[in-house]
Length: 384
Image (cartoon, rainbow, N blue to C red):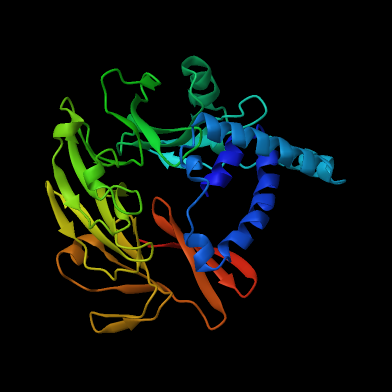
């Protein structure tokens, strides 16, 4: 994966990156299938671990040129390139929005903004079919000003007002990010605000002066997977090094991650301890204390309104009922945390179908259902 990321970092256009992914996959298959003795031999390419190192970048540029030469020799190359570029820069693309507060936000790239702009508009404007967008953050302008090849990795805002935000910026498109506080009122970064150096960071607002943070800046609190194995509670105006730990995972766990879910009673701060990529433990921060949520470790959890939504991976017997694997169930969040187990079945897969995933809406849950080879999307909402 590091080799792939290095190769992609040196390519200038999205269409070239798409083409090189296929070539890289073909190269990696024999390596993945090599016998253990070959894989365990001393790695002669350890210098590639220094992804920004001079030797690694020289190798990348040389490999990119070889790749371009091979790809451009393919008779259909130019047609594929032109078609892909036209798709990626088309103004007819759907501007999928993310709702924060009373505004709709969208990250958009085109020929004039190859690194993208984070922009917003109102409901009336968006529904008009020709929305007027206000640019919140221009990534091309930021890169030109600072000289660092930043990639936008999202903006996490304090709900429900969504005025104080935390922007994640990735140098060169890596999976590590720098976090900076951003003020929606001034459309600018906050001088002296929350700021976290480049790391595998996750952040969540607690209130306007407090955030939860997971990072791998402290070598003593990094899992064998390279992620943070702790969550820190950081108060505004205090040194990050003095922030207390409020949750911790084992060294061999995957990591600790924090997030915020919107509920009718306000934002809910969530701490997730990922034991493996398939098993997890959830905790909610309530009145300054962490409360463990008693749900199956392999279930996917979400919140919609006042409902706790669970997508089951295994059969689950609870409250005198048994729900089959693959089902989506819900319960009133407040009642569930109080110990009640009055769960309702939202939807269950059929004999020839599966539920591929769920996504959250403000008052409804959107589920992707797959029937054999046909995909459908369904919207479920609790009516008054």
